[in-house]
Image (cartoon, rainbow, N blue to C red):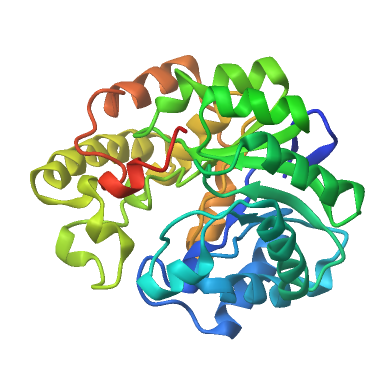
Amino acid sequence: MQTRKLGDQGLEVSAIGFGCMGLSGTYGTAPDEAAAIALLHRAVELGVTFFDTAEIYGMTTNEVLVGKGLAEFKGRVRIATKFGFDLEAARAAGRPAGTNSRPENIRAVADASLKRLGVDVIDLFYQHRVDPNVPIEDVAGAVGDLVKAGKVRWFGLSEAGPDTIRRAHAVHPVSALQSEYSLWTRDPEKTVLPVCRELGIGFVPYSPLGRGFLAGAVTSHDSLAQNDFRRFVPRFQGEALEKNLSLVETLTGIAREKGRTPAQLALAWLLSRGDDIVPIPGTTKVDRLEENVGAADVDLTDADLAAIEAAIPETGVEGARYDARGLSMVGL
């Protein structure tokens, strides 16, 4: 697989990465450890060198799993992890709740993540969500100190707004911004992507397949497990879901004509948006992993791109991408 650069500070990764959150059961039942590790190994075999985890995923268990699964590939892969949620509050609530980006907590999370991942340095350390109670300059300075100490290589932000990105970058270079971006979430094109390109910051779309929706993985609200996060997302509920399903049907028809899958078209469309974009689709299934990686070999003509965007127009998606609480934590 071809590689792409994230930012101007030297971070280079595979054109398609792997989002590891789902390995801890966010979208239903998690695979057992052996199956999850086998999946990580297969990803490396397919040329994936960029793996994304976070302290909050599985309440720290995801980092442990990723560290164990990628232990034999040290030096061959890049692992990104994140700080910034209040872990104790999240444990009490059973879901992310509250932020904590105080410098002392950033340092403590870094040390704990290093141990859980079993590595000597964190390749990319993101602030998971902007903390309204801590100046972003203090956050950037704390991560910069970790870089100087050799514990972190590169600094990233997640779901930050343009002003926050600029202020952070002025203190310590930001290599990557991770935010939701896909055919059915195109907000970054208007706001943060231009700023990232002005400052030389790479862009990492999470949920590049619309939380599996663009891959045809969701057919109804009832098809989602009771513990599936998507049950609480407006786009997966009621009339919004019914309308959105028709969009996927159109995309599936275009994919069939090209001998591809809708997931491959959705990922190839993202890759076409710029060489500074590295999507991180996640899955718990080997066949889906192979399908996603295959998107790197899909060539889209101008006519293909026009047809794809007509199938899922920017204003055609029904429902918000998060509930009110989730939306209150993005774009700060």
